[in-house]
Image 1 (cartoon, rainbow, N blue to C red):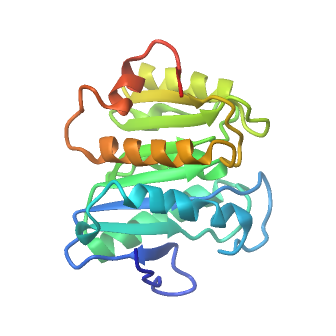
Image 2: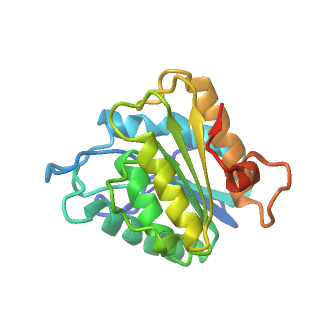
Amino acid sequence: MQDHEGKSATSALWLRHLPQRPRAAIITLHGGRADSYRTSQPWHLAALRMRPVLRAAATAVPLDETVLAHVRYRHRGWNQDDPLKDTYRALSELQQTAGPVPTILIGHSMGGRAALRAADHPQVHGVLALAPWLPPGEPASQLSGKRAVVVHGDRDRLTSPHNSAVHIERARAVGARAGIILIHNGDHAMLRRSILWHRTVTTLVADLLHPDERPLGLTRISWTADAPLVL
């Protein structure tokens, strides 16, 4: 995977790989804080955490036709839906750069919340939310007709696996193909059992980008399970 710099310092889309004839895209969204107007920087730990996640996702796709990128936030905090606005800007920039290619959003923590919120964008083909921050009452209607999987560590002490499970049930109720997977002994930072976290990302991205549901795929199994799958 070769770095491909974004258009400018004000761009919401930080391109890491741009093929000549893109047919799909994967965009990651890192975590942050509930409230902070400090500038988000690519060397912050939350941003660095998503680099191996993007590398894991890249192994699931043909690199000669898949855009790889990060969302570049203006601020570190959620504030007034700031990361969601940045995500919409990034998707608009992606469309200008690569066309209306099907896109998978992969978000961690606050970024998971933003990714799930941005599911209503017409370019979003699926969402993978890792240990997402989902406060009670978080809207789910935007997931109607979309594909989504939440992966949460069952020992997460910063964000709630229970809230994730409730959110998936609400998403299913509005017509989403949605599921939840728990990483046994998994933590919020995805450091404990990191190999399993990354292997699961690879598998789910391959499923989510596939035009049809794979009958035996992990994603499909999570969508039809009555209870969270445990790995």
